[in-house]
Image 1: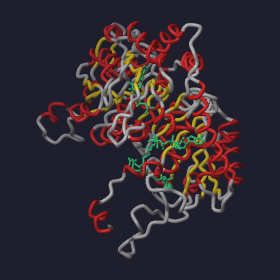
Image 2: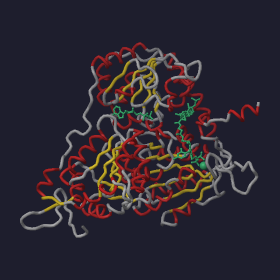
Image 3: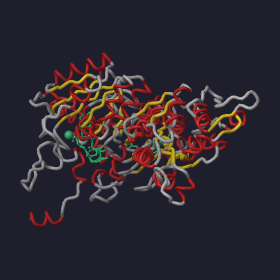
Image 4: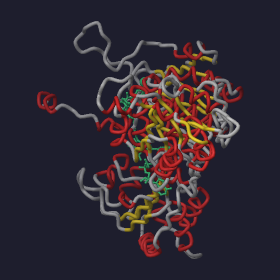
Length: 590
Ligand code: OXT
Ligand code: ADP
Ligand code: MG
């Protein structure tokens, strides 16, 4: 297939004057391009190496990674940023499996992506006769994604791609698996018939208009509130209804709490932002409107002490309005009093229309109480940020990052780790929508470099990745990818010599270090230098600031090894309580 000459729109392989033919390779490329997909994140090998070449020759951007998990993460976050399914391309069995974590993570986070994998010969796989990279990939993928399809015949490629696109972006977005056996790529068919077989998906994510009575119910409940709260989740960020959402928040005057990836939907410095009074507003609100946020673990399942309940399972007494595209999400953890099912853009529009011109702002005593709590936490934070300890701690280093984002609000912040994640979330204000990309619903490590590459490729904007040293290790080899494509990514590693801290000791006294501890004083900056990027070793906030400013200005791939006090972190960051503690140990201790 190496001699093929792909062209845009109708690519044919062999041209004989009478009957030009096309093949599976070109039909897949044409089908993607027809649907406005211009980028593939992947890793070549049998049976898709030629495919990557042909896609590049046909004008697509083909970004090759060092590990499929990063390619998958890149595709997933590209989907989140653009509302188009991000495409990850892998080889069969092991490559496919490497991409699968990202596919499952995309599905969990409601990001649209399509994992396209080459696969081995069906006849051999199904008889389990030991083919090269044999695996029933469709069966393996099915339980981990929103939908899974396999295409066996060239004439079905158009429909296969159309179904994959629709499944990924319609309704609740998610991950889709598309299985393309090796034999499919080589199949030929008449070029004109091939062209006709392609499907341009019309309106892939149709609006879902909420029912008027549901809108009315929500408005009445909101009107009755004495202590209302709006929670904005990453679904609200995905929806790209930014102006209407802001109008809704501002017209109602209700305090709002952004979930991590919804930070910046309105500037975190907005007077109504209640992020700095999180515990207070969750426990005290009487009516809560969830906008693209699930009542999962990150919101303590909508009950228990966080919500003012008497014990860990008790309902706190508040009423909920939930805006979500998935009707099934309602009542998942607690009863939802006013479900508003539809796409966020349409729901917010309908609410705005129903507000009228004389909507009363929330009671002043509620706004005052939230402001008081917020001011207290802001003052506490300002005090911590003003310190300049040696060695640097999370606060003094993040004070720099906070300033850098403030003057570069368009920069995209990627963030993973435990303490490195939690401190960044609360210290670094975001000013614009979809600028904060992080570990999401699963708290998964390994998204860092894949997200950074995709963010830079999709947006062309500078990317700042704040990484725990452990977190970075999961995708660290992709710094070569960053250098190869000359991407404006500045990776800052918060190096505290380990997972959570660098201070644990081996309780047995043996020669191995403790399981959470890494090589002390590691020089991650050298890794970047190995590939031609800029490496900086920073031990003070001033050094960190200078290096970050230079990275933003030069747009050169940069890795800053920021040395952080190894005692500064806590076990699992802010989620220490999720660690099981041994009943045996507790008993013997008592
Ligand atoms: O209201 P109160 O008083 O409570 O105060 C809150 C806010 O009001 C206030 N606040 C502010 N104050 C002032 N100013 C401002 N601007 C402000 N903003 C907020 O601050 C507090 C806290 O606010 P927050 O954070 O909003 O509230 P809270 O209560 O924490 O919120 C709860 C949560 C649950 C919503 C929140 O904590 C959250 O989103 N957490 C996400 C946690 C998470 O996902 N963590 C990652 C997973 S941890 C663990 O699993 C790790 N592993 C295992 C592993 C994983 N994950 N994956 C894979 C594939 N393999 C293994 C590993 C290996 S982490 C990890 C590596 C760790 O080591 P690293 O070296 O990478 O990292 P370091 O820890 O740095 O060493
Ligand atoms: P967070 O972690 O920020 O709280 P979640 O991932 O838990 O957010 O929730 C996102 C929710 O948003 C999901 O329930 C999903 O169905 C919903 N969602 C995603 N896109 C849209 C959309 N365009 N319109 C309405 N709901 C959406
Ligand atoms: Mg660490």
